[in-house]
Amino acid sequence: MRKTLIEKKVYVKHALLLFILMACSITATQAQKEITVMVSPDKTDWVYSENQSCTFTVRVIKAQNELKDVTVDYELGPIEFPDVKKTNQPLKNGKLEIKGKMSTPGFLRCKVTTNIEGRTYTGLATVAYSPEKIKPVTDMPGDFKEYWETTLANARQTELKPTMVLLPERCTDKVNVYHVSFQNVRPGSRTYGILCVPKKEGKYPALLRVPGAGIRPYNGDVYTAERGAITLEIGIHGIPVTQTQAYYNNLSNGALWHYWEINNTDRDAFYYNRVIVGCLRAVDFLCGLEQYDGKTIGVAGSSQGGALSVITAALDKRIKFYAPLMPGLCDHLAYIHKRAGGWPHYFSKPEEVKEAIKYVCRYYDVVNFAQYLTVPGWFSWGYNDETCPPTSMQAAYNVISSPKELHVYLECGHFWYDELADEWSKWICKQLGVN
Image 1 (spheres, one colour):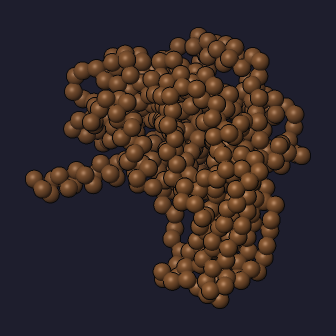
Image 2 (image 1 turned 90 degrees about the vertical axis):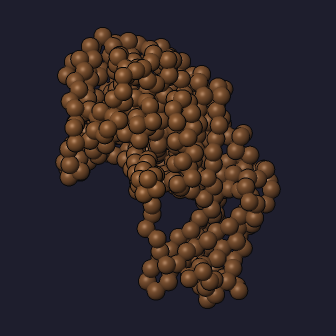
Image 3 (image 1 turned 60 degrees about the horizontal axis):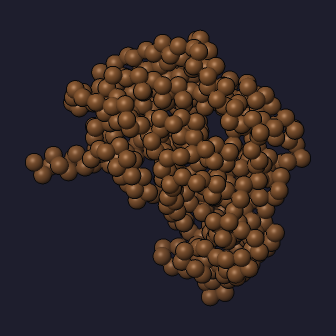
């Protein structure tokens, strides 16, 4: 019995980490290096008030010891817009102190690199200045709500016509696993995913898992389904989600290369139009299942999926909770005002951006959807995220008036810790009412 319990715990842990790995656009653990560049702020919470000085202490560590005779280069300033750059700075007695501050709400980043024996090592720390005061730059279109209501109403004139194919090799003693599809914005345009349904007769809450950026196969969330919930993990590209990774790599490097930029000068034809509608049609599909309890349905995802979680919860009042990690697509236009915007950084080179893209992106910005949220949300991100800058995520978070909670893992970049994964999962299961 003891061995069985241990094996079960290992399985559950691996199942959860596997889901998160597939949900996010990067690997869960980063390759470790022998030498570490440590950048440490002088406040343990990494939060400062405007005009308060911050001192970053830089150390270069090898085998748990400080390297003494090392020089470093560093950049210091607002994320993506450093205003101080220094090279060949020596570490005295193994340390270098760098002072900085901000006079306005935002995030101050100190990024340090060193070259040792032909290898480059990098470390950074990002501190917050009055983050609760950060306001979005992207403005709300006057017809934003009407546009999405009309878009969804038009899409729902197309019948779902769902398909469900049992995947016996993926089923467990408690859960049936299906490869499913349903029509999306027009006849023949389909969304695909992996549906997991408890085998025991009864009515169950439901969870929609929306994906991080990229093109890949999916395994489905068997972990949560075994605890007593229906789960649906969808892809966004209108293709089956059970092919080999090589198949998706060919699409990623071919027809779907930089898919997030496809038709981004056309509000109706923009790639994310179909993606967002597909998330809402997924809710339609889940609510139509005979096993659904008709009461509790939530949505969760990370990165691109974090954005889609917010968007789905904002557009569909059947959603009772949402749980986004490190959401992308936040405050796109911030770059134009020399502040970091969110992934995929449409305006990082504002001089090259067409006016049409500025118009379209406002209809696809999380900061605008966030203002329509009415249900509880659980957020988490790290201050050192270089893919989805915390400035952009904080701007979206600050406009939410419904119940919300933010769990910051300060040093975390665009990845996660085991503790974060556990905390996220526990909150989701609590909302679903499962053990």
